[in-house]
Image 1: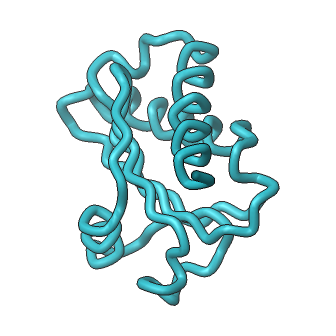
Image 2: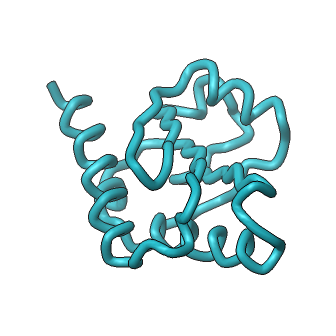
Image 3: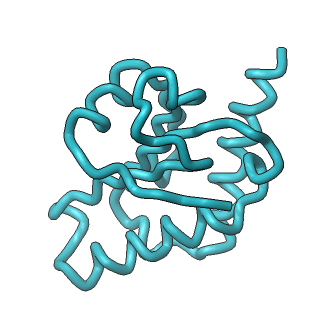
Length: 121
């Protein structure tokens, strides 16, 4: 699965405007499907953006959070088999780095699977 990163503020703004927000106690995810229609530059399978605030901790903690997010997106299989251009903006909340990784996997996979099941209706 190809994962690219969102590079500019215009892409973040467009995804925030048009995307759907999913909330959990640990994070908020903004999802926009079929990104190539509104952002033709991002035609990879998944485009990932992260908003990790300085309020979450120092640089070491923020980098740890970013590594966890990238790994979460790699191992969650909900969109791997679909041929959808997808953009995600991942916004972690306080204590994201202290939560067990297995809990994060379950929570995020449940959020994304709920989103995909809503789309199928």
